[in-house]
Image (tube, rainbow, N blue to C red; front, top):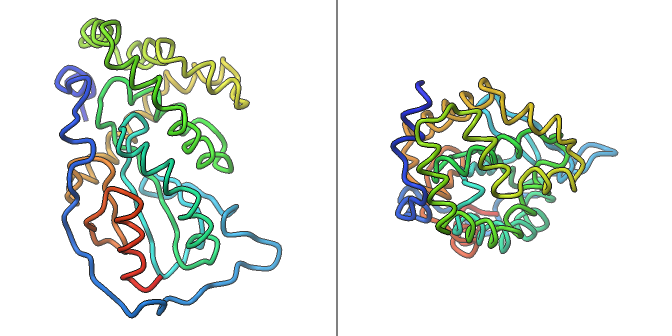
Length: 246
């Protein structure tokens, strides 16, 4: 996949794509019909986290009856609202019971500023992937303000024809991501190595392409057991989970 045209074509804030309605299948099952599944002795489903062949990171019972997949953007305000409101109840009420697993897949809905956010978010150990994701959403407001400022718009214009590695480094510095990740244990030299990792970026773009083939056209987009569901907020998603028997 060619990378540079993506940067040149996407506007700085594709708000129509961030929070667009999901549409899809909200099939139902008897309430509470999905039974809890105990973790193996000495294990905890909230600490069972691994990378997936599709390029995502999954928390929870790998064989959970309800497999939730989210395509999300770390700079999308609607994803941020879901992350702040939904992460804890999703984990404590549904993932910890073994009923639901949650896989997060990167989707660069805002183009340039999403690139360093995703590359650095995937640069950390899998054990802290989801806590870091939640913290990025908690700290999202100043990022949004910088992105939409005149300086952010000017940076977007300057970077339209830049190399992907230059784009990632410039936005990481401007948005303060290097310091954010340093404070959470990621050394600066490793962070900058991850920002320059062309293979990692290409894997994210390939994952986006695969998502689009399934009907992903905005963030957040949720799937349960392969079915795209009508939800973009935690309240909506929890309603669907309950309708599926969780």
